[in-house]
Image (cartoon, rainbow, N blue to C red):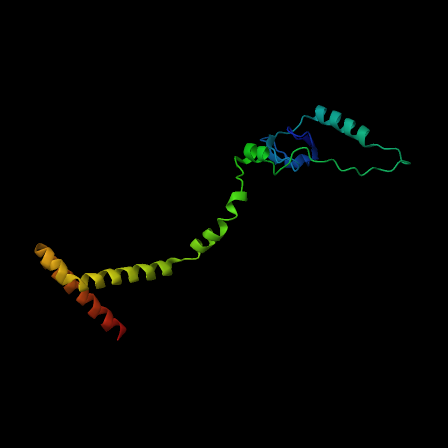
Amino acid sequence: MLVSCNTCQKKFSVPDSAVTESGRLLQCGACGNKWTQYPIKQKFEEKIKKITTAKTKLPSNKKKSSIKKKREINLYSEEYLKKKHGLTIKDTSDLKGNNKKQESRNNFGFHNYLVVISIFTITLFGILNLSEDIIVTNFPVIEPYINILNESLNVVRITFSRLLN
């Protein structure tokens, strides 16, 4: 069976057994267009064969010219990508300077975040421990809460020291 693409009119040869009564999804190799092909009736198929055999018969003394037909549609053009796949192309010339910043951010990692957060919390509790007397003298109402916080920190320290030993 000879099948023609609806978009670029390129013709393809498809075996008759490949296209069933319920139809078959075909894709053009030239432009990428997809369509459902149903079997062609026998009368039309004979006409198409006559036309194609008339065109393909060449005199035996002439050589075939191997002229490649250029593709009319550029598969990587912005219009085609937007129409076919819904993609838009962004200009990357302004991003060249930002690539180094992105690489350094991507290399930070989960474990480095854990280290930074643990150092931050240890520093925060150390400052709180050193300035405990100053805070209690200025805000005497907070003293029981600071004592509870210090006791719980001591429990955590003892637990970690026992785990490490």
